[in-house]
Length: 125
Image 1 (cartoon, one colour):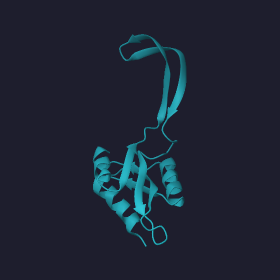
Image 2 (tube, one colour):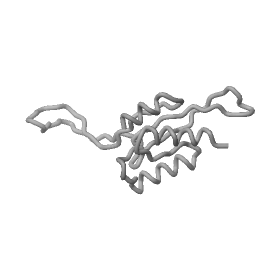
Image 3 (tube, helix red, strand yellow):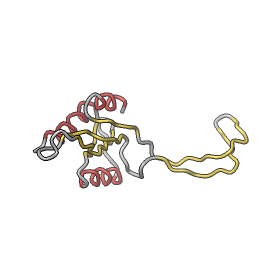
């Protein structure tokens, strides 16, 4: 993931880590090893939504012809997978929604693959 963030960050894209999960917050009243006791504990969720990509941000492109010189930020979502990893149904649906709305939605196993996917989107006619 770090490799992909570095590779993408050198171009027109700005990507951020999207941690999705549930945690608890409250007043710490006791600690014992890895256990923490909270008073007035309440749950909170983090991240965009279930299935949202590991990396999200935007890719800046120049629109032509009547917007010449104007830059537009295209929402960019990258689901990072190990070499043979596959997305879950929710992850695939999130990427499909991003693509359907005109954004860049990729599954990537490396920085080169992510960079090539963004380039392919930006170079299309």
